[in-house]
Every structure is written in structure tokens, then in C-alpha cells.
Length: 213
Image 1 (cartoon, rainbow, N blue to C red):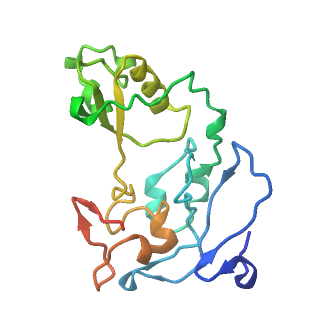
Image 2 (cartoon, rainbow, N blue to C red):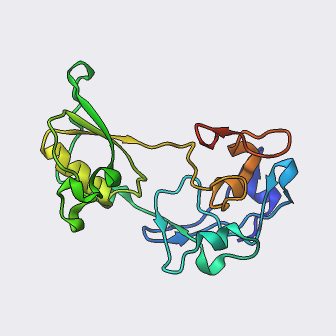
């Protein structure tokens, strides 16, 4: 769907109306513009991009991060965004526990790393699942993919056990790697806006990750 400046741009905002995109609708973006790495411009119409504010992602069976990173088209091997409808998910009466901070004991963990080693004594088919601890809350790193995913189900189970859930979602970890990483989303949309750059056009690494605004 090519964009036309007079019709689809208001001040600095580009927009388009898509009638009735229902849940499950798959979409992606292709951005045209100048590629000038030293100037911080990384537009590449050969690459399909995820919506920066999308709530769901579809990963094809032949997805290749390496193809996304290298020059050339990645149409056949790129991830896609998908429309989700949060209102359709059955939360089964779940609600926030709202445990007072003064009475909270929070355990921070990485969900997979906490259980994947055999020393966890958790069967291999359950190693991504939570074990209950004597705490009031669990804080773990996660990549939410919308209601209905593993995170939602874990959250409901933990709430039933009176354990609060805190998601540590680090937005300056964009998953696009270093300077030569794959332009999966924000880098391909507007590198100058989403990243803090040096005068050479290279991103400034912050906390061992490429620093986003």
C-alpha cells in the first residue's frame, strides 16, 4: 500500500486507514528511503519490518535472522506482525493482587534460565514452567506476545497461588543486535529517532545493549 504525502501525512505523522482488520490479520511494513550508515539513515526497502507497537508476532518456519541481517530481500524468511484482540482472552476471573510494597518479598529470575538445567529437578517438558516459591511476588524477564500466551497462563496460575507477577520488559534491548544486526523493526523505520547515535552514525551502546530512546 504505497503512501501519498498529501493524503497520508499530517505534520510529522504518517497514517493510513485500513477498514476492519480483524484478529489474526497478518501485516508487515516496507520502508523506502535513503541508506546512509554514516549519516544514521538505514532505510532498506528490501526488508520487511515488524510494527514497532504491534502486540503479536508470527514467526514463519523458514525464518532466518541471518537473511534479515545480510543485504538483499528477506521477504520469504521475515517475521510478520499480527493483529490480536485482547478482549477475546478468557482471564477466568483473574485480577491484580495489589500486594503492598512494604509487605512484598520479590524474587527476580529469568524464567527459562531458572529451570532449564537438570539441577532444577524439573522434568524436561516442564522446564519453562514456574515452581512456587515462598515469596509474595516473582519478577522475570519476558517477551510478551499478547493475551493467551505462556506469560498470561503463568500469571493466572501464580495469582491463584497468591503470588504477584512483575514483568521486566527491557525496551532498550531491541533484539536488532549491534551495528551490523538485523533491521527487524525500529532501526528500519527511523534509526535517527529510535537510537542515540554518535556523529559517525553508529549507535551508542548503553548497558551492553544498543541504546534506544
